[in-house]
Length: 67
Image 1 (cartoon, rainbow, N blue to C red):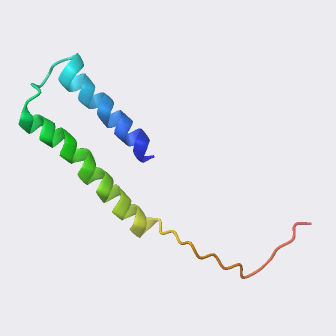
Image 2 (image 1 turned 180 degrees about the vertical axis):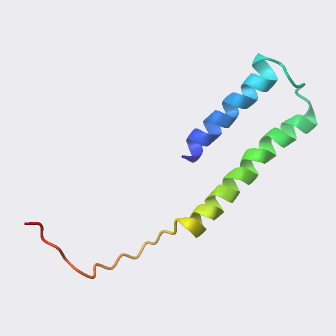
């Protein structure tokens, strides 16, 4: 999921800065373009830990046999 989001972001950045040249590729723009996905990925991973928790410990409490 993260790789797909980064690929979409990179494509949008490529279109804006290199293909259509809508914005100049300055140092401040480069810093902003790199900072946004880093902060976004950190936020996404932290939110996934809260809303979709995972664990390495699994306890089977009841066994079922399909008939």
